[in-house]
Image (cartoon, rainbow, N blue to C red):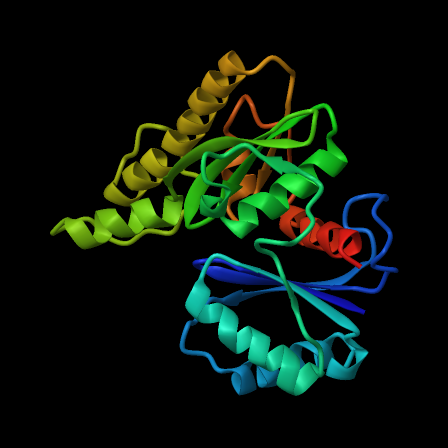
Length: 264
């Protein structure tokens, strides 16, 4: 089985695939047997990962010995090394790490391609495979990113904005009286209390941000892209937008599966 691991600033998303990893074409989530989401903790050791994964695998009626290959993408360098040690020491596998020298099948048009986060490249790979007419991927992570993928399979660049959770935490930590709130849809745009007012600014404000930035991107490109949202908060915000066509919270894992297939 193929173990796909995406290490983000806030969460680690893990997928276990039982399909032939050489298969590049197929429906979304092809062969995805199980998936999990963990907190990103830089202090977690390789041995601790072994304990965590052993428990998760057991709940899914699998064992660590079922893993025949691993692919990892990471935007948190200190968290990558313990994951690599876990793979070598407890799985007996050398992980494939998304980075320079990895075949992705897409061209990166950034001025400095090394500046592009691995997660954004992986999302672009999955998006081009699914929507060859071109796509804009909106990823609601620690940062809210917009990535443009052309019909030629080029990563054309994008936009980076503060994420919803980052904005909510900033309000709480930088003000004297505003509380920490759950990021949820309020009943109306006009809040009748402080919590609802903050929720309105976050959810409806970010929906407006998405629509505005997508419109600006569309004005600068010469193709009709599919607008796709991913990330844990994608369904919440996408429901309030007029531009997002669909949500796929497994887009990054699908991209990792495709990249692995292209490199073996």
